[in-house]
Length: 159
Image (cartoon, rainbow, N blue to C red; front, side, top):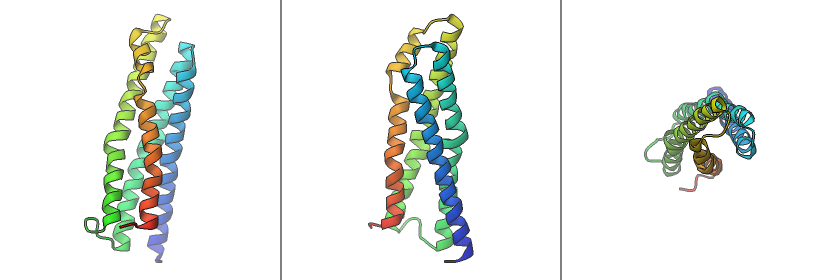
């Protein structure tokens, strides 16, 4: 194993750690916000979730892809004919282009409605509707399920 491969593996691992830490920060804050009754505390929880998304999950997901591409190129994999790598690319792009943006959009909508509710002093009907809609939780759980798949594919190279 060359030095460049070792460095890229370390960076890839650290990127994956940032991605999972960001996902954890979002999930913990979301659960806290959904269980809270006080609008001010809900607002803080959803701001924390949105911050976790912006500061950890999104940059970590982008960094995982970038370091993965550099690592794959350094090792010499063909990105289109290697079956497990192509499957990994599809799963990763689904997380990057569908799950993470939908999660960010849903978090932003909840945060905006929480701010409106704070201004009014009581929860708005739109906030109640968004709290009943579990899109952020579903997206977080979907990403959480797909991370082990993305780790399993390069580790076991099933096809």
